Image 1 (cartoon, rainbow, N blue to C red):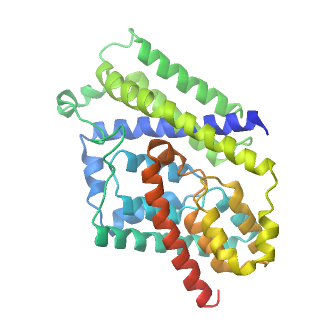
Image 2 (spheres, helix red, strand yellow):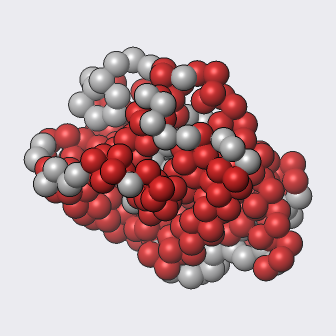
Image 3 (tube, rainbow, N blue to C red):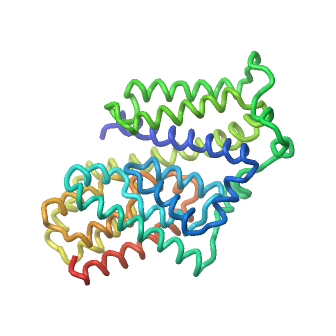
Length: 341
């Protein structure tokens, strides 16, 4: 079991979600709630925009959508649709092994995700996250609703509180570790550039915002309430999955011996909030062993590491989203299988 790799992955996931939380918090206050209200209005174009973010290869888009949901800015249906559209890190592998069919699958998942989101919000009415440490979403104080850009810029850049110094140092270490390849991808690619960009923006926010905003929102809310729990959950799940991998469970052999159960297996494995286990279905499809319907079901349910932050925030919300995706994955995979795909 490679504990160094597990720690690096934990720091990368936790770090990115943390900086996204900082930026979302800042944008919500900056807009005095306009961003959150705009997203809560729903509609096909807004739902499609959130799903499109989830379609981006890798887990970064899914992390962003989860952050929006835990702050009450998008509905449960919209998040479920975005997770259906998300394929996690497998998207990169699929683009490498079968790019044409991969793009077709991404388009199918995006369309299906939007349809599921709109249907769920229409049938069950839009449901927003109101529990846990963010029962009221992102709170606006009177001083922050006042007009004028000065409310987002601290009066003096000479003084530096302990909270500001702690956050700046944490973000600086994250930026350096990412730039040197200690966490995140080893090579310079768009993922590393994205990590560096959002971290740099978060550092700028932390360095420039007024003391009230920094203490009440960035430090007390994001850093103290979200970050420790997020880190422990991510590390715990990654350790468990590493142990399962070291045990050499014969998943591939079982699937080959029971192809009629492949669809159910793909959906059940898709519940695991990790990219690795799902690669078996991508590989088997690339070798012509599994039909397209099974791959589609697997991709609809799984979302790589994207749901780990929600699992850390609220296991019950994680179960609700995954339950929707399991039903959707079975429906999509079953329908395609009946159609001969």
